[in-house]
Length: 467
Image (tube, rainbow, N blue to C red; front, side, top):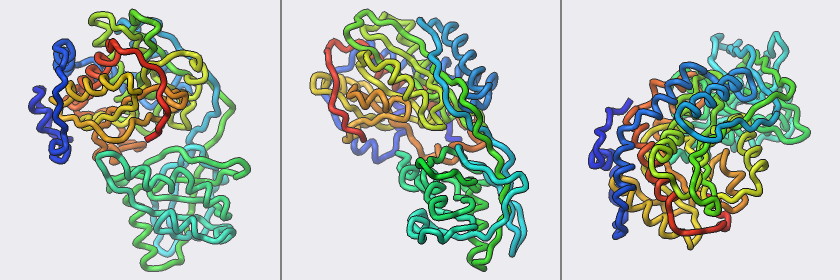
């Protein structure tokens, strides 16, 4: 855990990486005193911690479309109403349900020992007694892609590409394919099962779960992630011999469709014609942790920031906070929300889904008519040591379906250096949250919301640029 940050704006600026400070642009745009006051007051926020602590303690893990996620939705409604939000309600939909079962692995030979692993979401199952088969080692995902069709028949594939930590989280995209589509590739090549090195930057013995995707016509095979330490152990065994046999027991189940839903709450605006600002994070989590960084922090940060405008002068634009359901198994909540609100006008869509460490960069995707909004935001965030990125803002799993319609977006990029040490693991727990960094996030989001919600400019859609 990093040392607690000083609450002053100056100290927060010093906490930003040196490279960010060197590239910080100068600006002559004046900062509205009301914005600066709201920003600085939010550095003492306790609402986000209260929401996050309550959610992770009173609900805990929140696997999509299960009873636990339903309890989380009910908890959210009570909490949001107690905070004073208006029009609090749940928008439901149905979806497939995947639940975890028994998951064990052991090297049968030549060096018998147990391994630690976790099934990947939507994994197929072994028989109850498991399967025992020879293992084929692929140092990288590209090595698996190059394997001849049929070469894995009756065998267990092992892919061990090593993810690297990065401030912007880029290692996840670079190495995540082994999890996202690796099992599908192995199944098409005849594999009986697949284990991968966890997509994480840690060196511990907790495995990182996460969803995997199957193309139509491909029967899911058993698929799991080994802890980084055990994947490295298996690599060392392969340095001694290529004759390795593994016993694998994975018994997850895909259940009949069940209900999930998005929890919605609003800060009403004064001008309905100006469009709605949609913000939020996802309420569901994987079942092996309590979902503190992924994504209890996101719903807490965005809710706390919206609460600050709820308690202040009524903004011009309505701010709608959405606690999206079922993001982890495939973005069902975001898709359902976009479909249900397809005919609505949005001024902006943005989400927080990258933990709670300091925001260090922001990006915008705004039309030319809203250029001044981005400039004002840059000036207001500069005292927090936050720089403006050169690329257009993208979205995230939950708001991307809205952005596909062409609505504007702003991305508030958090420091992801620590994030993938705990992402999708049993270690995703409240103790990983630094309270002062959580407050910095609330201050950044409060600043953004204040500027966008009260902007006098009117704007329409942008040409979607991705990124």
